[in-house]
Amino acid sequence: MREFLYYSKKAVTSGKLIHGDMMKAGRMDIVLNVIIQIFFISNKMRDDVKLHLVFEGKGGNPKHLIFESNPEMPISKKDVGGLIKRMLYKSSGELKEIFPGCFIEDKNFESVLRDLEKDGKRILVLDERGKDIRKVKFNGGEVFVMGDHEGFGKKKKFLKGFEKISVGPVVYFASQVGVLINGELDRRLSDY
Ligand SMILES: C[S@@+](CC[C@H](N)C(=O)[O-])C[C@H]1O[C@@H](n2cnc3c(N)ncnc32)[C@H](O)[C@@H]1O
Image 1 (cartoon, rainbow, N blue to C red):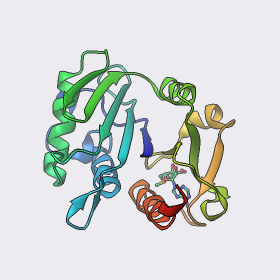
Image 2 (image 1 turned 180 degrees about the horizontal axis):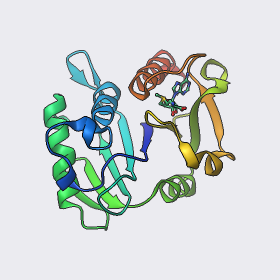
Image 3 (image 1 turned 45 degrees about the vertical axis):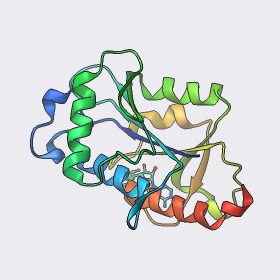
């Protein structure tokens, strides 16, 4: 299983705040790109991906959404946007599966990372100044954590103690970082 986490300080936390322009929903347009680029390859969905999204924008409590590879997941941005909107509407606080492979709960970024750590996951924070990904060994228990268009902002302090890795010397879009990590893992599949 490949596990990713995308953190957004601005992505809205209420379905009511998603209407029409996804850019105006705390840059939900970036979220859609991340989902599509991380899950899909030509003509099919990857079958071994788990993606955590943490939204801490306007609307309500911080939300933790989890998507697991599922053949029913839509591929168009419009449909993925509708899926997120419905998940936010149906959210009740406790962890709940809203659609097959799509879960939501109230939880902030720090708690999500701490819980992943408790589960034995190795947290790798994506940062262009981190250790070159090509020099990092993986065993399948990693969670790749990336920020939104504003990066991690004030969460940087909390992230200080975690390993940082880089996919290259320039700053990429989060969705591009996802593609580069998937490409690196595809090349190393035989190592797992
Ligand atoms: C568009 S970038 C954020 C840019 C933002 N202005 C900043 O200061 O971080 C989105 C996220 O992608 C990841 N990222 C971008 N380029 C990267 C690179 N070369 N190596 C590793 N991670 C990268 C980081 O996690 C970053 O938070």
